[in-house]
Image (cartoon, rainbow, N blue to C red; front, top):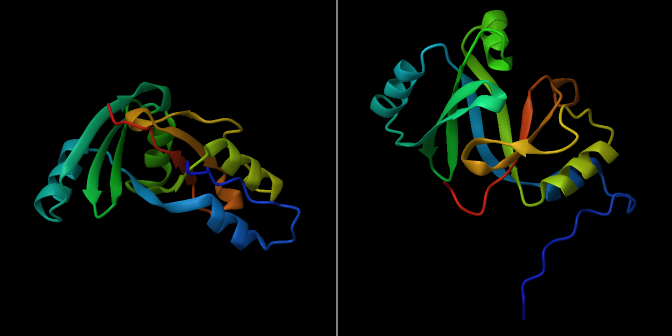
Amino acid sequence: MAARRRSPPDLQAGRPAGAILSAVFTRIDHVGIAVADLDAAVALHEREYGMPLVHREVVASQGVEAVLLDVGESHVELLAPLGDDTPVGRFLARRGPGLHHVAYGVEDIEAALAALKAQGLRLIDEAPRTGIRGSRVAFLHPSSSASVLTELVEPATFHP
């Protein structure tokens, strides 16, 4: 018998929002940290924290060079801006280095976005865009998520 893909939550069934969101989010995918010096931050995480670097990539569409380091089944994503006039560049100018976003894994990003929008949450991305390692990503506005930039990640079926 073939495995059935889980259908999106029924938003009309009177389920509380927390129950719907727990059905949408499958795990913490990564924590994004904005850094000014990517090589120094990588060295700190590898040397002091013992986290292996598993991937490094320039994501030009988002204006960053990103590094993934493994921690258990999740990642720490270090983000260095490609310029001052990028989202991470502006973040660093306003707030300095530090926590940039929390990312949750989802099985079906379109269904997740529809569920969140139906709950009245403000989306930055109405449709997914390409993220690191060919993943599909979308962001929720911090005004809808306790002032924390929140990313949804549907991993690619393979990692280039």
